[in-house]
Length: 173
Image (cartoon, rainbow, N blue to C red):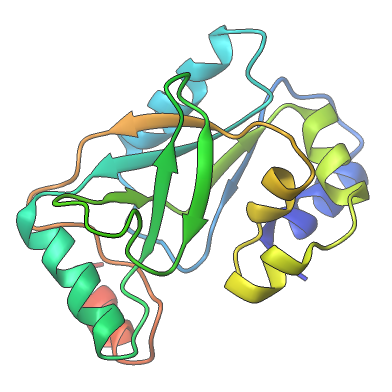
């Protein structure tokens, strides 16, 4: 049903051991390589079971997300965080409402194998279905999603959320 479930199935079929499994979302092919390194570095903390990156948006990226949302397009996924660096919420809407600068979630996830298996065993949540965001299954189950801050590339980060995004991303590739 989603990338994380496919990742869990593929990992189980491989029959090999890994310390961390990365799920790189297909709609986000422009993820810079340093994001992967930053994500893996988070696992030096044994308490981290699942992690995903985010970038603090500049004014232009925040405006783009708001504009896309106002025009009925998905410009990206926003995330809000607790003081301990774990996620409170993810949404395709600009959250938190009224914030000057938004936090853009990056479509890249990393799991310890046990956490990946736990995800696959959880039932799909209504919140996940409502937003169309797989990471909400974990939050709905009361599990932590650790956030790793990365720098927003100059000019922002483009992903494929709408059909008109395809030519732009292809050109950037």
